[in-house]
Image 1 (tube, helix red, strand yellow):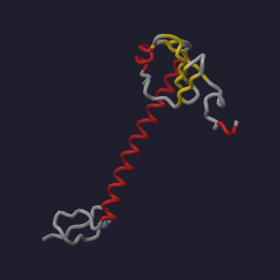
Image 2 (cartoon, helix red, strand yellow):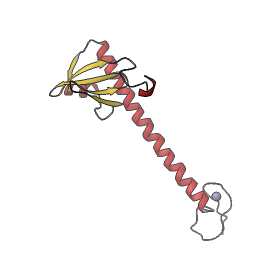
Image 3 (cartoon, helix red, strand yellow):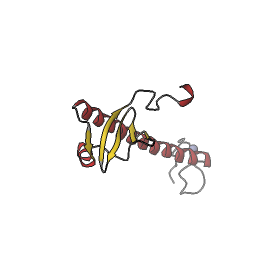
Image 4 (spheres, protein in one colour):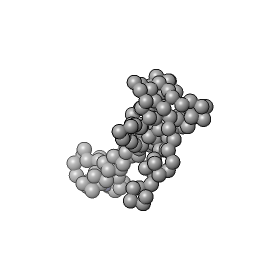
Length: 128
Ligand SMILES: [Zn+2]
């Protein structure tokens, strides 16, 4: 019978032949490492989508676009599921992606807005 080693710490495993970890500690540690890895990938993917949305808004604004339809934004690659905050008052509703955003101006029509740092909520309220 060959010697088996733990997948986490590489120490020799004793006991049942189907064991792949030497202890509960190593089994839990391995599971947590796997979970942390998944979260890292998820966070990277979401961050990439947010940055992509920001760049799209920046580029459209630089090109002189003011108002765009939902379709035009979709064609540009904007993903409506990814934004950093939602601001709403009696006059307007905005999806923000950092300090750039889309103000809803009509049915499926949006205006690109750029907020100063304070307006965009990048500064925590208690510091204002
Ligand atoms: Zn181990």
